[in-house]
Image (tube, rainbow, N blue to C red; front, side, top):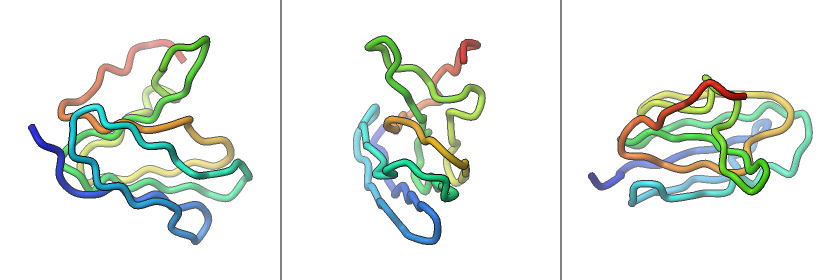
Length: 98
């Protein structure tokens, strides 16, 4: 399935990134530069956006069960953000580890 739509990422009141994914598993790095401003991500695609951290050279879902954003929904957080996001055609498995 082709991914259509866009991902919008905001930090504070500023729009930081707008991504237009096209392929399953496509990776995007969020440009957040740390800080305590509130972060917002809106998934305006027909796919699932998953937030990831790199730990011990492995990609791990960020803060399960909050690591996945369904199509047409948004999420927000404060403080440190994920290392990157990927867009998936199907809902990724979230696992139990944190």
